Length: 171
Image 1: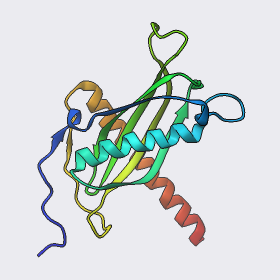
Image 2: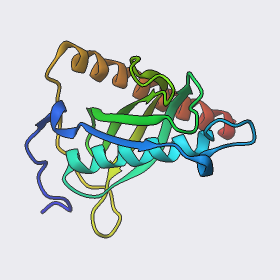
Image 3: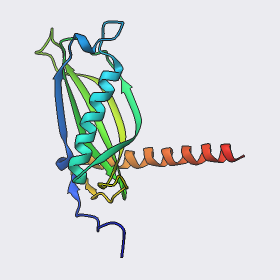
Image 4: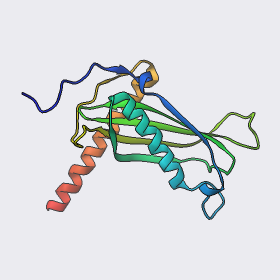
């Protein structure tokens, strides 16, 4: 008898896609007058968590933020959209990619500006908080396939970095 139930059938990438949107206000501002990076990080974590929970069919917790890149400042009044999807799945973990764009309040007819991208790792957990199997993600498009392969590269780098640090500490 096993501790965990069988892995559920896979779901296509599109099943996990989630978008959250909000208008940035004065309470979101840092000392320099733009939206605080921490506000955007929480927004990124929220949308990524929703995508991970949807894909895994239950609770998923943030294990790491692999990378977050802020490419343009966000301003008060901007309508910000965070788009997330599960890029890759392992046995209990998932990589979620997030793209954040802003519609500028003073040029709403222009195309949204990419303001941040991020990659987060989530782990599916059961009611007791123990890791649980997550269903495979099934890439549908060439972009989904590319994201899946790139997620595997990021995972390999993450694991190699962890091994190198542990070896250094042991030596």
